Length: 256
Image (tube, rainbow, N blue to C red; front, side, top):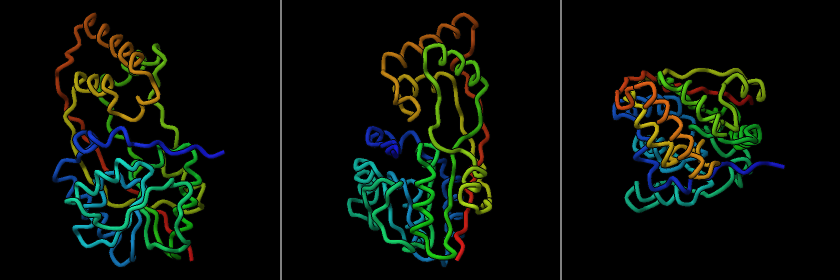
């Protein structure tokens, strides 16, 4: 039995404010993707969300369609586009796309496969709707680890909270499943200023998807455990650190 992908309906009101890319990195990424998609024909973004990736590509002239399981995220995309649907949008499960085979020249998936337990079905569906010689382009997510990450995860585990990724996070796993070698796109370097105080606020408010399976009280108790450790050790909870990250996308070609 297939597991339904995680819906981001609950995040529609805060997604853009909490997942935005720095302006320079966002523009550089859109340029990299637009260059990859040029001349391929229509592109489908699965897990299109609020249009964080799709709208800048649309502005660059890329022909798009978008699919997402979360209706609230699609409504936010339309609002972000000025109130009118900027390209065809469909609410659907990406493991069961109601789309014809060989319909698209490219499929994009940004931070989608790591959220889907049945990621193989999503990858198979992406390949099914691709035209011969089309390309599946994926960002698996992840990022730089903060200095406090290991200790915090240990404390979270004591409270039964695990930062879990139900799907796949490595291009090699998708490559092995599809029988296609991954091709890296040019990386985009980005930076993020983080503090433990900011992370604790996100976890307590359950901004990040990995916190959603846990009751609010359990998350508060787990974060209280971290605050106890902070107090006992004099950890500088408000000190910001600059974390260097890389936006790395991978392309998987469909054979003829």
